[in-house]
Structures are given as structure tokens and as C-alpha cells.
Length: 325
Image 1: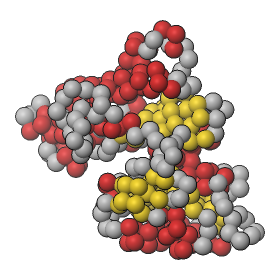
Image 2 (image 1 turned 90 degrees about the vertical axis):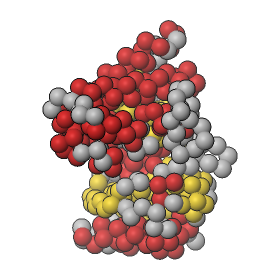
Image 3 (image 1 turned 180 degrees about the horizontal axis):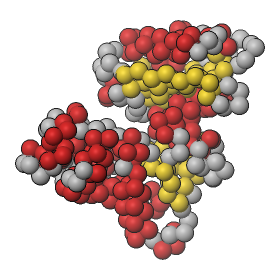
Image 4 (image 1 turned 30 degrees about the horizontal axis):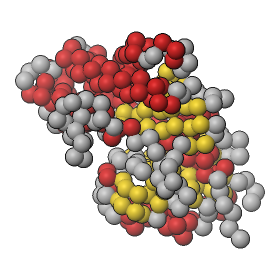
């Protein structure tokens, strides 16, 4: 192999991102596409393989130089067997993704949770290089979590761990698609924020938001929220700050349970509204952890942006590639 390349793939709920990295972990190619929602696993695998081939072809990179593929997927995954246990946004359940992609691309494939991939990316190449333990909370359409300890991703016997979005944090009756209400995801995800802000727009309490996108929840995305706040929608800012405070209490819980050295805030929502999130989360965390923990952790913003998950998946895939006989 003249120029061994590693590929990382971030399979989010609304987008797919492919990056190709050389043996120094430098990105040499990148391509993004929207997902098609619940199109079925086989069709999804074909689209993933197509995007990878297009990324190589459009950048004059031989696909035969592909040494390994790491792919980050939403929801719990069986990392040992490369199986997506469940990905609600994609409509997948018990999908043998690694085996299917290995058949398509003829290279070793590693499957991991998308936020685990993002945290591992920041641990390997971003804001947490050299840290012993790193936790991540990534608010988006839902809220994902990840944890890296001494270079290893925290996981259970047959599944990835850190589904922090599905932990109960409030007594409200809001649901995030499960029977348990008051979860972090139901209270502080972008979808939860959008629902509250749509009501504000409908009542005339968020005029900038109303002018921009009306009351369509699907259109109230992170950049739209940030723009509405810049244009003076104080009620929108209040909702975002309340959600950031809720994330802050989740950070307090993480510190008390696992005492990570660094806690990373990432994802599109945080990236678009980083000043609000950093301010509110730090204040809640510092004011509510036990005093003995107050100097034991740092809260940092993700450095790698949208590339974090794909880069982390690429590095993980390269490190764990099982070369075929």
C-alpha cells in the first residue's frame, strides 16, 4: 500500500460526514451529505459506501489505499461485534454494520457511538490531549454522552455506555420518546428548545424568530436560535439559558459519579451558542459540586467542531483495525 489512509465517518441523524486522514492524522479529504432518514439499513449502507468512494474519487485518492474505517453512529452500539443496537433517528435495530460495510469496501471496519467518537477525537487530537479521563456532553436533536478513560472508551459488556440524554433530571411530564419523562434530552435538547421557542413565536413573544422561520419546529435549528438572540429575542435567550443550566446539572452529576478531568461541551447547538453554554454550565457546575471536587475538573468547548466525530472514528478505527488474513 503506497499511502495508507484511514477513513472516519460520522453518521448523524440528519447528516453524514466522511473524512480521509493520512498516517499523520491530517485530513486530506472531506465530504458531507444529508441522510435520508429511515430508509432502511441496506440502503443506508449503500449510501455510506457511495459517499466514501466519492470522497476518495473526487480527491484523486486510490480507494485501494483505504486501510481502515471507523464509523460513529447515534445510539447504543456493540463495539466488539460492530452492531448498531438501536438508532432511533435512522430506524435501525440490531444492524450488523461492520460486516455489511466490510463486504462493500473490503477493509476492516470499527463501529462506535457517535458521541464516543467525538470525545475520542478531542482526546486524541483536540482539547483533551494527554488527559486521563474525558467526558463529553453533546446537545443536538437529542443529547449524547461519551467517556474516555486512559485511552479506552467506557462501555458495558455488549453495548456502549453514557446515554446521558436518557437519564432523569427533572420532574416534568415531557417525554423524549420513552416512557420515562423529565430526561435530560426531553428538557434540554435542541428539539425541546425548538418546541418552546415555537410557542413563543406563535404568541408573538419572539418576533425575530417568527419572521425568520415562523413556528415550524423543524426549521428552528441552532443557527436560527443564535440569530434570533442576536436580533433581540430575549425570550428565546431565556429558554436557551434554562436548557444550558439543565446541562450544567448533568455535568454536576457526571463529576460526582466519575470525576472526569475534562468535560467537553460539543455539538451544533453548543457551537452556535458557545458563550451562553459555557457561562451557564460553568456557573451551575462550580456552584453545585461538592467542594472537594471544585478544582478537579475543567469544562472546555470542543475544538474540532463538526469534524470531531469523524476524526475520532478514524483514529479509533486505525488503532483497532483487524487485518484480514
